[in-house]
Length: 227
Ligand SMILES: O=C(O)COP(=O)(O)O
Ligand SMILES: [Mg+2]
Image (tube, rainbow, N blue to C red):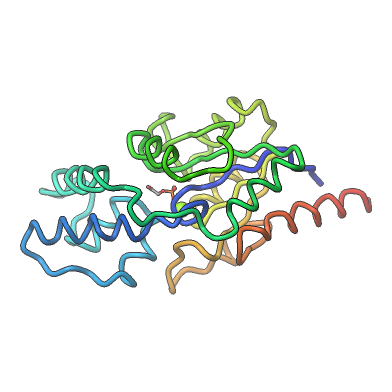
């Protein structure tokens, strides 16, 4: 059993509810192309799969297909202009971060979002105190599900993977965390599609609200002391 000293978080769908601003950006792109907007319920479940998923549902284009790169670049350009209009920390996140700090547990961010979007967003989220590390999708050569960004976060935070907990809302988050040697939790309040089965992703537990991270850490420490 481990004692958690650092909690790393995914950004979209875990720390921050970014779906409204990403949906607005996609619908603006669709409008520019003379197409009808997509309903929010259609967009929200794919937000943690990043811009490729948004271009797929908006234009039925996959990476490498003609027009894909232009659409994606324009989507990110539109999104960058207004990336924190409706975006908020999920309810409970400020209290969770404050409670981690009170316990001397560091926290950081590992996201697949590119840094030119992550950095201004993290600035504007109104975090109660800054993270020890912010690793974006283009910070390292590989992004999640590869473990490299997780291990990079460990280096910056001077943490051992076995003392880290990674909280995310996508299967790639669990895979990246596990392959890096971390414990993992799935944020069920994030962007999980109806056809996905998070209980099969191999995470240590599934949580329904941010503050349950504390319960899991306490239970893990209890299990450790009971040994
Ligand atoms: O922008 C993405 O690709 C998804 O971002 P996330 O990894 O913070 O969920
Ligand atoms: Mg996510």
